[in-house]
Image (cartoon, rainbow, N blue to C red; front, side):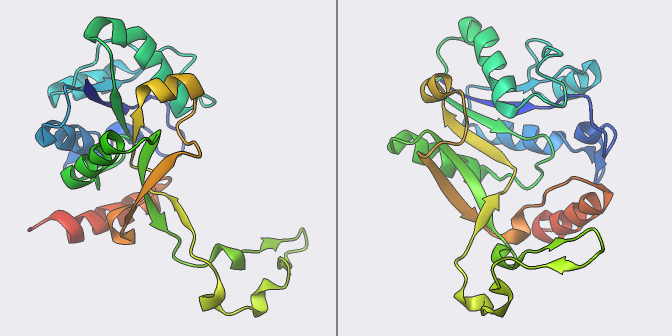
Length: 229
């Protein structure tokens, strides 16, 4: 059995009601729900939330909300793994053994059917624990520096003299979704392991949304990438 789970807690401090905030005319959670349903890749599309408002909106768009997530796994300290382990423990007995689970973040309008399909193909054919999309850093992270208490720049290891092209390429989690082997996940209780495979995606096809500036940038990127196509 393959399922998609969108984890969307109600509490959001930097952007109030972030998971259901309007994104180009629709609550942002609509986008991952819609793509997961349209893909026809999953035996069920579910939303895990502690919020009745989020659950009602998720149901409106076709997702199922079989239970209310516990407060313990909805606070600021709860991890994605915590939320997924609760979902699996509470729900697998009702629907049968879950073999593969794709956990999609609610603020992920850039998720595509092709990406979801590719992740499932990899995890079904290879002996990996997790598959996720990653993005190349736009600037070499080796050139990062800190700022002292008196506002002076502090460089690391004299790397400022090194040429940009001499640095290795580094990547970061695109923050969109994880496709996991459930049996392996239950044993390790962690999503990212040494046996994780990546799908490299273009920087224009992802955007972390942590503040209002990020939100506006994501809307611009989405319009350029998806609208009128």
